[in-house]
Amino acid sequence: MDNRKDQIVEAAVKRFSHFGFHKTTMNEIADDLRITKANLYYYYTDKSALIIDVITKIANDVYDLEENIIMQYSGNLLETMAELLEMRAVSMKKYYMLHINENLDWIKGIDINGVMESFYQRDIQRLCILFQKAKECNELHMENIQESARSYAEIIKGLSIFHAVSDMITGIPDEDNVNKILLSQKRATKFIFDSKIISNK
Image 1 (cartoon, rainbow, N blue to C red):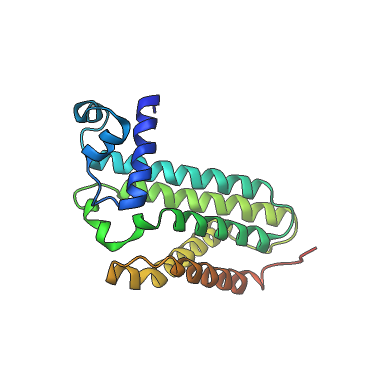
Image 2: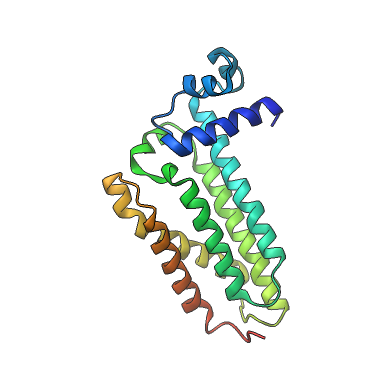
């Protein structure tokens, strides 16, 4: 991504995070950057393409933070997994307006399935790396790391959706819900891995 596109994405992230996808116009993003709408459309022919790049940028930032946490794993799997969940909760709070139902009109007509599938596969890959590290440290007993990573990713995602349902129905953002999601995910993580942890040093 060239420098101008980076600037556009950064400006869009700020505006989308504050007002949501649906309520933000391309004119407003162009004004924020002090460029013409025609100049903006030179880089992004429509808002949908820009939204995809914004979502990708946010996801990449999260994955970079996750990678740092996983690389620092030092023999306590539950602590590392709690840190990963807490970091995602911070990110969810920061970009809360992007999760609210009133802003979901932007998704119509966008082929986002491929993008979301790539994020999902990256989630599994990150978990596989962490589980393998724990197994090599003799902290974790796990027969099929790939399948376990997939199941855990689905459970954590499902808990997030379960607790966010009230926000989706009302369209009223409730950041306290992120704390409920985090606590629920931590409980599930402890429940799942208590019987698989060999030792905690």
